[in-house]
Length: 115
Image 1 (cartoon, one colour):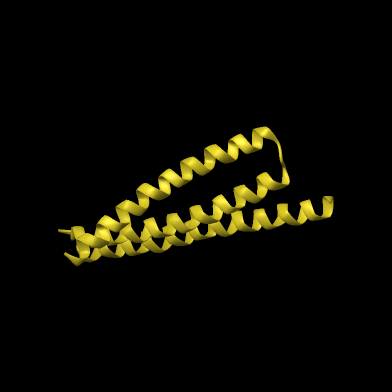
Image 2 (spheres, rainbow, N blue to C red):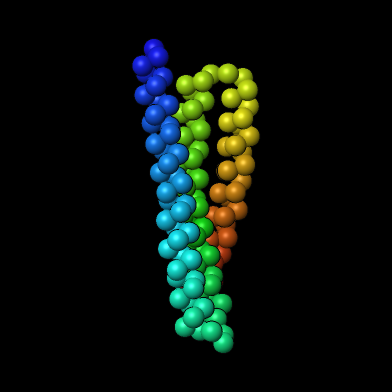
């Protein structure tokens, strides 16, 4: 049983790392894109370009949140304590709320691009 628990714990940690890598990659990529946009348009940065960058970073955040939630679920399954279950519930509610509102914002930005 300990062997299986160790496997699940390792898998959860790998998923955590993947989530963080996605966050760092998205942030780095879009920071560079933002800086290039600012340098090219030093006098007047187009709002649409900034909205596009915000939309892209929102997508990376949502993807990373999905990985982190999956990892939290695996961690909780391996450590079935009431405290862990409460902590997981709070984290899922918070991350789901963030994901929901971030998703809405991304939709609005995408919709404004097509208008």
